[in-house]
Length: 180
Image 1: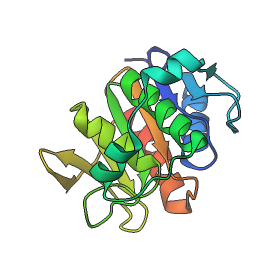
Image 2: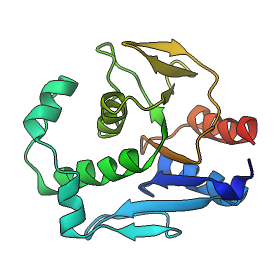
Image 3: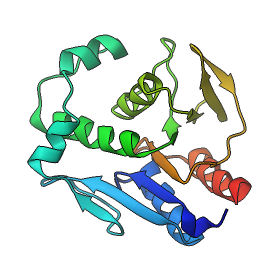
């Protein structure tokens, strides 16, 4: 398949999402970055402003997310909108790539973790590059296994930490190089 047949779904935030966007643009792929009023996006290419009604499509209970991810999320309107926009990224994708850190409880650290958990719930192929372990992992059944991922689906999500390090940046670059 040709690169121009692929679409990256992301949020355009600084860090991993910006790097996914840079790589997609360099490869000649389409890019959709979901955002909303009041959200700062680093990427301007492919910006898709979600309306209030569209954000509600991705509405999720913060207590449910807190329980699922073994952490406490406060009732902050901005956080709620971020989680709703992540829902659109994952819902639009056929496979999901995340850069961050896998925790002991098998969840991914930070807000990015909701994207990973939602991908698990939707039974979508999910890959996480753990910046501390310097390795890619795939979610298989109920555990993480080392992996060498390739982008194989025309609609894929790329998301992750704002605190992207050199290993994470290289992992995203290598993902694109090894896939196309």
